[in-house]
Image (cartoon, rainbow, N blue to C red; front, side):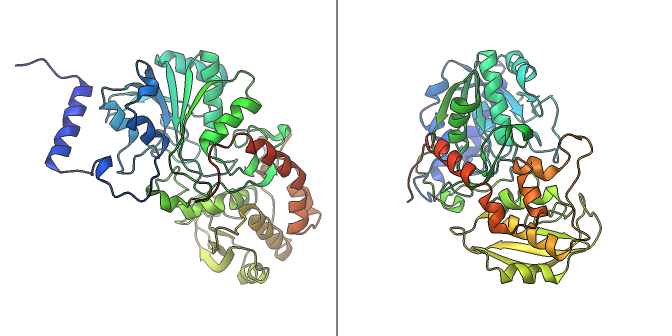
Length: 427
């Protein structure tokens, strides 16, 4: 008998065997091309992993780290002798995506690849640097699909990882992916230091209009006291107005309540409903598009449609969440539809929704109160980055007046943002 094969050799042999028989998913070069678009990981692979050759590599990723043929990049890299992948770092929901919101998978050895998977959720600073050191890696890669919102926590996982990598003396490589809601512009209020949390560490706008690679550049230059040794592997063929569907990439849920690109388009606005006593649609099949409460009725949809908000339409909807707020209770409310992505402003639309529901049901509407944080008890303040949105709405201001309150800070952020953009122009 010959020498026993290593696990990597077995994986490589299996991959070749599947390709040779024509079984399984088609190879990358056999997929129909929708454009000249390539993600950062495709660019890295197309160059034979030259950027990380001779280094022990770990990667922060989750189920969204896929190639256009639906294979996961970790499975592909683990079977490729041109890269020495030695560790995976799992964020919220875990590397394979087995955990719900606010959960992770813990440390384990991945059955598919035999790689150790380290739990990094809610780890930062020295604790995270120690994990990187213990893993034995030289370079940490990051590849997770973002949703374009400041309070979508994967960008802060990247921020914490960059900080820890710098502390541990590790190189940091971002494999860039599209902003699924395009990158035309930024929207909404900017985070203030007093309300820094894991749903918003630093002063960026609520819908940032950047890719993760661009954000990494901004973080490194503007916010990190000890900058990381950063490299961004840029996408090919991505323009700031390119629709996600036009990239040819399949959509993979970045988290259990981000099921579609449509969800991402509304999330940076309707995610604010997590700061109210209305259901934001968790426990339904259309989270962040279905919004309601037991006290809401047809008047809300009528009032919103009468406002003719740009790019938005509202349908009277009744639904019963299976978990989270108002679980197993019939809720009245609306389903939000984006009718024109080019004119739709997610934050302005959600502010109009909140102002209107508060006016219609003044005895029922309430802000979600966080008893575990008496110094900053209102969850909406953490989502919007200050007390101003809440206090302006409570003072009876209309949507335009509320929006005017963040105009100066948004303009200042837009100038900072522009310095760190990689991709320019439209198609």
